[in-house]
Image 1: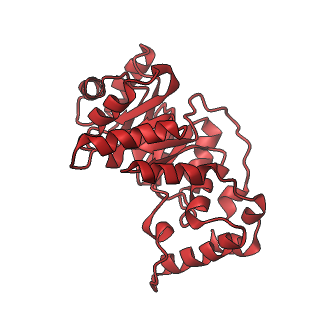
Image 2 (image 1 turned 135 degrees about the vertical axis):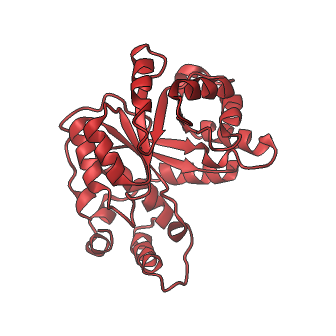
Image 3 (image 1 turned 180 degrees about the vertical axis):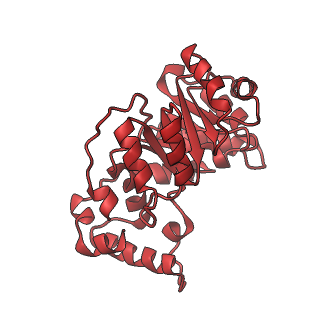
Length: 271
């Protein structure tokens, strides 16, 4: 567990730091009536979540998220979305229209560097607060962090209890004052105790056994783990029902004993 145990002190203060936990809108746009999605956003808000991420590619997610949030004080929450298509400016305007809300943070997916000058101008004019890059490839994000004036990155996977391959990216972001947002934390091996011979499933079961000795569930530990690295500002949680987001929010509120992270067996398993 080398990366999180570094307890790195920031060498540069992040200029943009979102709330520690957020609701991913990736499942809010799934086919079906609006009611469940709206109730899920309401439940997240009532649970204290104030960061909401969406995308034009998530079906009806933007529209539903905006409908649910429009009755809330706009100054109380942060909304992020993603650029879809080659015209970044048109994409942002379309997202704002679907949401019925101003957008705080806009992510560019993968390596579409042509969008950054447009978004930088929107940031300079105060139409958005921050620019980010989103990818499931930490090496791609690492290159962008070197070359683009980013406020944050959104990393899907690659920094979790079961995979810390993105630790070099996190260290670079920390040194440059760039906030890291992670998603894809509650994966199948974390949520299900599979009786599988797959090495990842076996390691997940072993980690779970260690966590249980400290009264901590595997999902609870998984949600708490990423923010132990000083670069990680926020963890996004995907949910499609009020019960699901309430359960996840309850896990977030439960403290994890510091002694768990120092457990020798856990240190061997989480690396």
